[in-house]
Image (cartoon, rainbow, N blue to C red; front, side):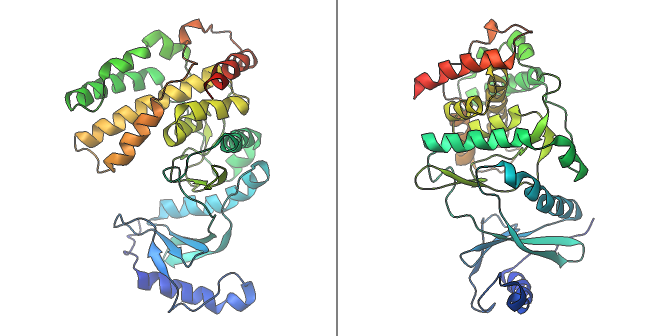
Length: 332
């Protein structure tokens, strides 16, 4: 594996200087490299993503595997763009910033993160359009680009892990472990992923990857490098962690998903957040505690649609749709 050098502001300016030399032909980047404002997006020491001026963002792949994902993302964006009501970043330049390591210079979508702006009712419609649009992307077409197909996770296995994690959080006074009892083994079995439901899944829907305007509308979705063909409940789970369970379930319902995938996504999110926070409290990871606590709070927000014992194995999504919409819209 290629060992990536540590990017610095000078690294970025040298790369931008090269792009500026081609600017008269492309018209995509303007200004002088010496005076251009370049700064890392996150102060995490990795410095793999940089703001370039006010209108662009530069992604630097740290290894060959990430480079493959970046190159695949460029092609995938063009496939998903016509199906979505929200913006997808546009690449204005791409190439290698180090031997075998890819960079992409993308347009910046104006807006903030889910931590900065709360999603409005119209924003939930945007999220519904996102989920519905992903269902329309031909999975076979995504597969030809190298988008991997992943099997659904076992909710029962995840439930067992969450139960143990919740006990550790309870000892640290971070979470009431009794709350995990809401998901029983029979309920987890009933919420297993159904055959033939795989779709294109963003798989990294987080508060940082949703661009939200001050009016609560969803302006765009970032970082398509983790996309897979798989369980649509994973994206519902991502939205539950990012914007809260009620908003996520309402959006999924508007997108045409029934009660089963909505509840499955809800419990994937709840189990994941308990496990991730416990790992952080135990010192197994260095993820930011405030962000993990926020995701846990979002995922465990109460919703009306939590009657898994009423499911039958032959329930159809179109029947569940009515139950979901009637149950969820009453919370607004």
